[in-house]
Length: 437
Image (cartoon, rainbow, N blue to C red; front, side, top):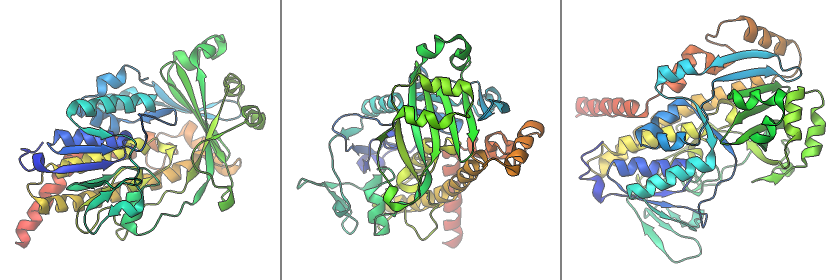
């Protein structure tokens, strides 16, 4: 943490009050900055349902002091179980206790709304100013003057740094790259269904799903179903094929006829179909192709007054459970680097280091996530049979079809420490400056 003499007079404005924006507000306040968060919604709202937080994200949340509050309504899964979609054969079971001990943090599942509420309360307690009902469009992002003009009002906000944590449809990203990013369909959608756990417990042969908390993934052809418990609710996320045609794109949530969807699952494991029969409603969201940005795509403007984090910078897909984790890593790295600055020039240097570090790592995560989706959602045939043979008979190592069980990839992913990485990069940068002086 910095001595805060420079930071106390430095105002950071975060655009977006989601998980990443609120976590960033806390982290930057801990570094001594004055922080304002601008949130579009008039009140605290959250879409979606469950969220996985892997050890690399949980360690950051331990650091900022919200771990115990999160744990009050979190589930700690015992293992990740990968199953055949037709008969439920267990292809691979990955114990999660050993990595929790190794990395000093467990893997958690919880309601996104609960996580956001905990971060919101903590941000206010730390002195973060949060403004609701704030609308911003691309025209209001004034890169030339380093200001932000609010939509539907004459107010112009002044800040020393604006951080765009405004999601995959980020207006700050659009301003930085000079156009609105093109949405490219991934060819998949996700159906989300929530089941009351008491309804599952009423069926003795299904009680194991609640009593033994696991993340269970049924691996289907061009699809998969991920299930896990929340606080009294059982979460099902069903990735399903969808058209890539532009005319079939949709944004936001859509209601689904659950009976019609269930009718397409006649050859899936009976337990999964029975769980789905307990559902009363279903929503679906569309997946879009992620892009691993190269050095030509700016995350920071030339003047060092605007930058982007989270999905605004590196929107991914959920196949490795790293969406929230990557954003939390990024904003933690950014806050640590900014905390070392003693003047505006060093802020600019810190932003450059942040951009380099996070583009490299998130690019790898995005590519690994896409590869995992391809492997776990293989079409029926000889390649899938070979994959299943590896699951059943080979010891996890490099190239194992569950990368989270590959000890080398797992350590790279879950063992990442934002503070150490930022410190080492900053020290290396300073030494390089001294050599060139």
